[in-house]
Length: 432
Image 1: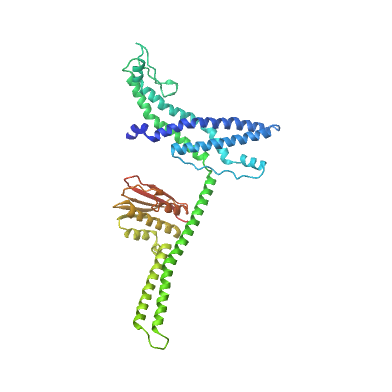
Image 2 (image 1 turned 180 degrees about the horizontal axis):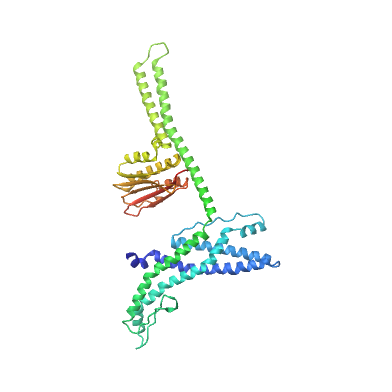
């Protein structure tokens, strides 16, 4: 009930009403260019004499449809927060006829033209939905209009019905009757946002299907992006491994070699007396300690590449991870089939990063980790009762997690309103 009563006053409702008004002329121009220019171009192309002008008109119609499609995507992004990526344009070709052929074969332009044709009935309903707002306000102000106009005795105060043909529009014959009309206006205003939202939902679907990248093109683009991310991630890991080896294990090995060399000098020549036994023992102990530190560094490095706990399976690895956190974690695992090693590794490091964020940034006193298998997909959910406010762009490791899961065609979703709670859901394939 609260949502119904407050809907007319929300920013979303006003934005959708504005979208209906602004997209109506765009739809009319798109329909005119598709119907008139394209039809005329096709008709001229069918004749021998008008083939040249006909092709020019067809290309012009396709170009105008593409420009209007870009404007429509901008309106959807600005007012509806529905950002649809622009489809890839055809690559420029050499020669006039080659460019002409590329323009005529542009799938995105033809889909934009189809959008211009099917947009008209939707645009009419959008204009009709926007009219509900004006009608509701007009009827709601009927008592005020009566006081301003002050009609003569017996004169009716006209009202407007939101239904076609004026059905159900009462005409007030007295000041008291104007409040009935005002009540009808209130009902109309309460219904207007929901009617507008339903019409806009149809247009949203058309924009995504006809004005966005084609399914194959989008798949190719996603594969190119994930391949680039995988290459960058591998290169970053190699650089980090090289830096850790150079700054850690290599330095300790050099110190170990120097300690052993100095100990050999204190022992003296072979077969001779020991020059400084106490110093030699001290150097040997230092070398032994350095060897232990090198071994520890190498174990930490190998654990960062592939945690040994994953050898027993992801369920045991997650249990070990939760047991070592400072915040109590409720664990639930349901994995009938074991994912591939690469997916297990990604899942483990993602959960480790998310639990680290819970400890460092959320201020939570309790967390929940669920790992489930649904429809051949691995779903991970990490939630906490902290103060919320987590976003991809906050720099708490979430951008890196999003890139990591995308390399295997996974997804990451965050719900973290201010005040909490925070829930991060990761979906991965079972096999990379």
